[in-house]
Image 1 (cartoon, rainbow, N blue to C red):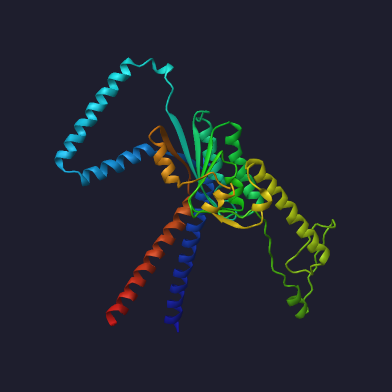
Image 2: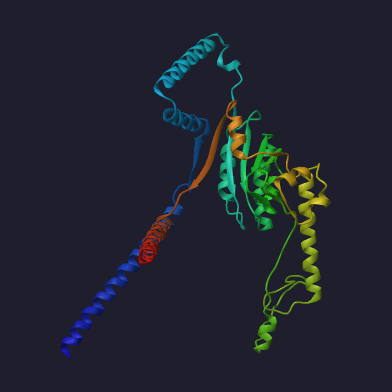
Length: 353
């Protein structure tokens, strides 16, 4: 009995020590995370020169494909061209009198239902507006299936900042710009879409379950107390009325009308009553009804523009807290373990056959 109590006490002491150690780590992570949020800026602007990326890709292919003689001939031609360019620069007027090359600033927006990318977007736009001039251009590669009206309204307002500066704005849709995504896209001076990209869906939707009958069946009361006739038109647990439904639909119609007017303001050539039915349109169909201006992928547009412009891809990278880094590490480690386990399992099944 004494021996049992001794072993149990030892086990209890170890358990308590482990619990305190875990708590200390958790508290430490929380303190470091809070401190990192309070200190300094939350992210950094990163810039990639797209022209350099294209040149590196070309060099890599040339080195792999061309033989030694072809490479020598090509290098000789490049040196000759560089010498001619240098000579031409000497004869050219002073740099102050020469128009500089156009700059294209490329931003990416990958939207979800809450338009979570609006925070990086606003930072990227702020950075670009510090440098961009009227002779330059902003290109947004936009992907979004739509989402909350107020969130996408804010995202659209951020894009409007570019238009107020009178900087040409091009938006490319490679996959989808529906509902709130099209609310953003319609602001473009030039709107491009891939042939099978999904565009449009100028409509409004709202849906919610109602458990009132289930609660009533189980003799459970649920009360909704409001001040104001239309403070709560429809509820999840309360009893919904015809009057409440009518008001809710009225509000949906008002939102739809605002959406239609917004699109028509920026896409004046669109028959808004024809396209604002909530339907989606593939790129080719969207071109036929003036929802887009041209069929082209963002890759093609950038490659074509690279001959006459310097293209810069601008990204705002948010700093991750220590806590987030630990979480990502844990997820990554668990993924690796699961993949290794799955690989062994499937391999054993294959060999067992």
